[in-house]
Image (cartoon, rainbow, N blue to C red; front, side, top):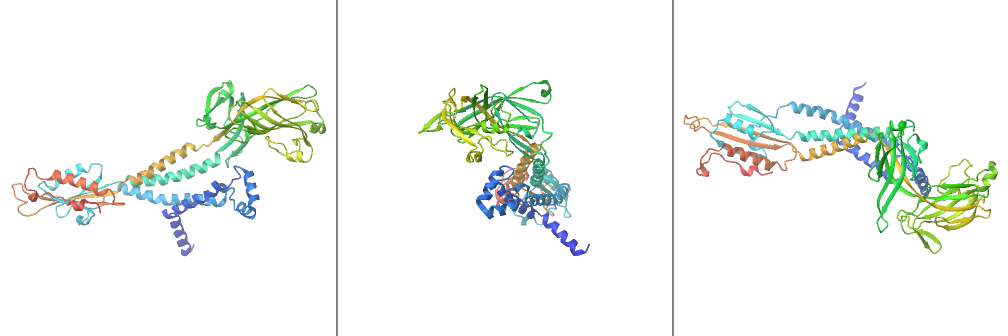
Length: 544
C-alpha cells in the first residue's frame, strides 16, 4: 500500500477518533432522531403514515423514500449510530492508557521560579527544611505528593490533587458507549405487545403473537419462545374526582408463571398505572380502560346469543364510546343465507347518559346512568370476504352497496329491548369493564439504567472536581547568622499553586493552605509584626 494511502487512512482515523468528531456525531444523532419524534412511524402506526403521505403528496413520498417514517431502522441513522460508537471507542482507548500512565507517574518537578505562578506565598521560619517538609506533608494529607532534595540544599514537595476529574470524564464517556451498546442490544431482543382483556375473569397468556391485539418485536424476535406467563383480570376499580378527572385506576389481577403454570396456582396482584407487574423478566402495564356493552339477541328460532365486545372510547373525559357488536345467525349452514342474516349492533355508549336534543352523549366517566344509542344492521357484514376489518365498526362498503341495511334505531338502558321486523329481539343487558394491558420485554433495561446513572455521576464529577497542583520549597539561608550555633538559623518557605484546568475557586483553597502552614511554621512568641520573619503574600493568594 502506497504511503499517500496510508497517510490518508491514518489522518481519517485520527479525525474520526477525535473528541471534536465525537461531539459532532452526538449532535447529528440527536438531530437524526428528531424525525422519529415529529413524524409518524410505521412501526407504531402505519395508518397514520399512509394518511400523512396521502395528505402531503410528493413531499410525503420523498420522505418515505428517504426512510423518514422508519427512522430508527434506516441506513443513515444506523451509520451515524455506528460512527459515534467507533469514534468514542477510538477516542477513549488512548485516553485511558494516558490516564493509567499518569496515575503511576510522580507529580511534576517544582518550578525553578515559584513566584511566577498565579498563586504564591512566602515566609521565613526557624525550623530546618526537614521539619518544614514534615509539616507540609501533614498539612497536605490527601494530596498525591513526592518530596525531592535539590542541588542547593533546598528541599521541595510537589503535590497534586483532582485526579477524579479525569476519572469522571472517562466514566462519563464509557457510560455513553455502554448506553449505546445496551440500547442497540435492547432494540434487537425487546418486544412490546398490547391486548384488551375484559375485567370479568377473562384470561390472557403470553404464549405467542396471536394472543395480542398488536405486537412490536425487536429485530431478532420472531414471536416464538416468549416468556411464559398468564394473567387473569378479575375486576377493575376506577375513582374519579367530582370534575370527572381520573383519580385512581386499579385492576385486580391474578397471574401464573414458572411452576405455577403446572400446579395451577394463581397469585394476586393489584395492577395500577404506575405499579406494573414484573414477572419472568417482563413487565405488565395498565395503560387504559373502557366499557364493553353486553347485548343478547334472541333469534326467531328461539335461540339466544350474547355478545360482549369492547367499544372504543372517543371522549377521554366522559368515556363516551363507540363500537360494533356482531352476530352470526345460529343454525344457518348455507353461506349465502348466512350472509343475508348477519346482525351488527353499532352506535354510542354513555356511562352517564345525557340527551342533547335527540343525540346521546355522556356527562361523567363513571357508570351512573348507562345507556346506548344503537343502529341494528342486517345483511352481509363482509366478515367472510377475506379482508380484515375493525372490531369497532362495520364495513362501510357493505352499507354503501346495500348489502347491509339498517333495520332499527333505538336508545336503550340496561334491561330494555327492541323487536325487529322478523321477530328478532335485541336486548341491552348491561355493561362490563375492560382493561388495556401492555407487556414489555427489554433484557437490557437494568444495564441502561446503570449506564445512565454512571453517565450522570461521571459528568457531575468531571464538572465539580478541579485538577490543581501545589509546591512547597524550603530554602536554608546560608551564612551568618543563620548558621550560628545559637539556633537562629532561618529557612525561607515558598509556596506556589496552579490549577490545571479552571482556576476559579482555587485561590481560596490555596490561601487557606498557605496561611495555615506558614502560621504553623511561624516562630513562637509575640513581637513587632514588622520584625516577624514569617510573612505571606496576601495579594498573590487572591484569585487571578
